Length: 207
Image 1: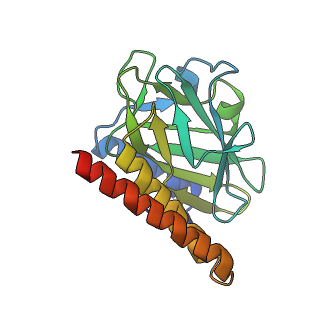
Image 2: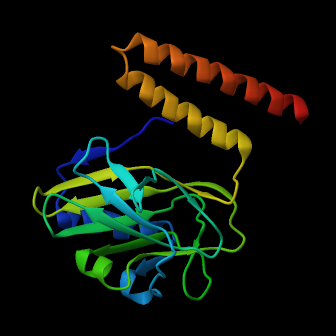
């Protein structure tokens, strides 16, 4: 799926209102960062950098647009913005791998840079979670008065093989678009795409 990262002129008040409305209308469980248990040093802490284009994600310096996590992990998010002040919201609109401290499904978490420095903005991966989960990121940057949005993913356990292949296809399409002026690299991408097609055919044959 193509990246949908975007920046828009949405005020902080509008941003908070929309995030709250989505949660309320969808009957989502929403957690403020202060209500959650603090993470351990081994748990994934995702840095969302909105100063790059497209928005980038990292855990301990490793790429994390597709975050690999395990059941029981406490996942937290922090935003890197042009200034120190910002507000961050994470929304799962379909399925969520997260649960709160009472083991209830957690569809939305939000907070500011103050919450990030405290117990963190995030939740725990449910012990029954497995597969690929798309979520939505919204970061309001106080310095620019812009809201940045994106739709990364969490992969819990090994995930579904066909879903993993489809995600890889999306990454290749993005790379191909960025390398339009480099035919040698494009040929390498096309070769990888053909290998993925063979994998999909093998999967379908084995069903």
